[in-house]
Image (cartoon, rainbow, N blue to C red; front, top):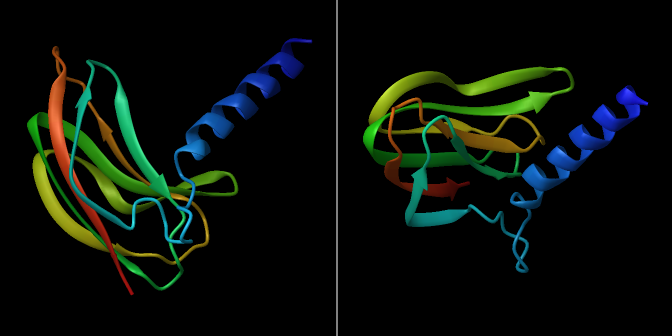
Length: 127
């Protein structure tokens, strides 16, 4: 019974996380061109911008945060998390990664500060 409940909860969580990763009506990834997107991350919380990008594409990103946050870009390959950009603490950065898998990629920011922090990010897909 507990195992079934755990499976159900995990399935629900995956559906919720992936629901923000859908493509737009024109077939482009939802995060194909994000400029100046603002968000606030609560203490101990995280924010992810996830999407399925075309294999071979290059995704350029930049962000600034009021306080340093843990940042990484990753995707899940069967049973492991694969980092396209290794996790590191920073309050601003820019860079790019090449899409090598058909998996959903997530840019992830985690706030371990004692107060909420505001951030702004850009993400552009280049072919």
